Length: 366
Image (cartoon, rainbow, N blue to C red; front, side, top):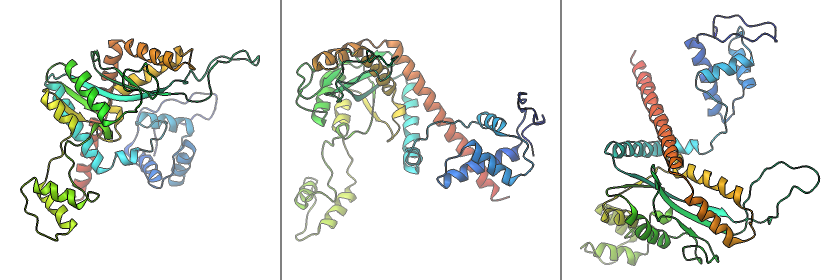
């Protein structure tokens, strides 16, 4: 078995030649070792992988450097492990991901305007974390050690730039914020912003992409569940012309609710529909599908660099507003293009997995 046609260099000072070809047996062996390790919850390193390969094949002729090049050549990379990935690859979330990707591509092919919205926050005492310093004690900033006051930033944008008039800042006890400064983000505050600041500023027939935060998903009419009071369940059924016999148990009432198959209607969805728009929710845990997450990263870096008065909350709020409005349209365009690349990567992975599963299923009949 070999990774290529060149012989292993015996002199460590001589650069090893790149292997021109990878045989299928080697590729299968190394992939299986890596996958088996992760199934046992063991993180793979070059040294541990090389040791296991040598245990399977005493004549394996390559060392760490060539093995590392091989892994890169076959699509592996050394990066931070995402603890959410196990959940994200569960059958339910994979189905939701595929459905989302199918819909977003359909909307793009129809030429519809895609608008993304989200909230983030900025702590008023947040400043740049690193800089050039010496031991004189003169290279320090006048900034409190605490996090300061949290400012919630709510915004919407498309690949053409931010939606005009959509910026909302909310913080407790900072009167210069444009929202009720006595409350954090709530369903009422979000719905008021959605109806008064977002919808009137959108082009006709837009698609609004948002996540599954609870204040995005308040039901227009709550469907009873096991935590509902019995009286509320009875009222729900009677409003739908259901005859309720006396002394009926709560479980039987809930069974009747399920038999009606009531459709969940969200306040946000209904508001958008009334204005001729469509709401599309991201699959859970897939925030990388929202371009505005990249905009937030750019925005926070800018604010930190220019936050020279972190102890003055009102000044920081004005800085947040100024820096948000300075984000150029080409930044939004680049963020949308980057996310489309991420989407295409997932689509390609799903296609490859489908081919592999079909091939493995076919092998069973050989």
